[in-house]
View 1 (cartoon, rainbow, N blue to C red):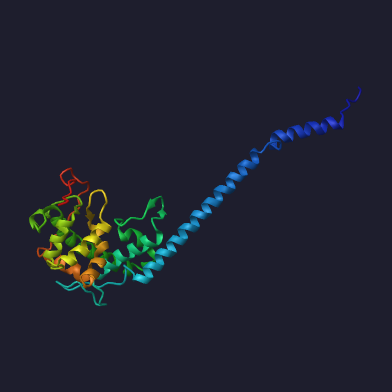
View 2 (cartoon, rainbow, N blue to C red):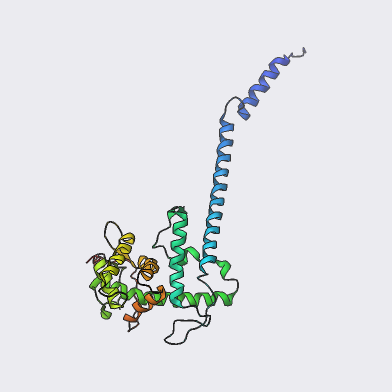
Length: 275
């Protein structure tokens, strides 16, 4: 039997052809896939770094403004100041101030696909498990936050009543309702009832400028969160402390009613009074 002869050059050509098909050496597809993976990794790394930087900014703001989750104690009936001398009013002001500070620093920076807005609850931004290192601390923080929410809802009841009626109507705030927004005329009525302003037209004009800076440009209204947010500027305008303004507004609600948020805004509540 004669031995079959194979040309080494043909063998090399065949091997090269097979290898070319297996590893796709003759095209840039592998290189493109590799570059796509590298770009994806770089993008992910940038997002992680951006998130880390944002967290650092927020934490620095918290430290500079004072933690919203400091240790708290139970408060005596009729008092709103704990044993450390930090009032609930001041904590709410600090939350609003911290949100404003972060908002200014980030300049509408997109965070997790959403813009940081004034109406975004401060506790959603600043709540961090690092503040709750023990069950006891966690319990105290929850209790304090619950008290702060109750205080905020009492103030919101006054705000919403004036937003709807231009006056305090305690019987109208005891049922579940949607959020309200207030116009400048009713806002001035609220400030006058709380004795924050009098008939001083110069002060009212200054407050109107502040209101105009914060109001929704389409509706001419402000929300309750925005109201809390702008209190420090109103306080400066009338030469008072922000927490004193909150206390004055709360004093209107002698019944201690809480504003009960509805799960969904009804069509009746969708009409916001802009008078």
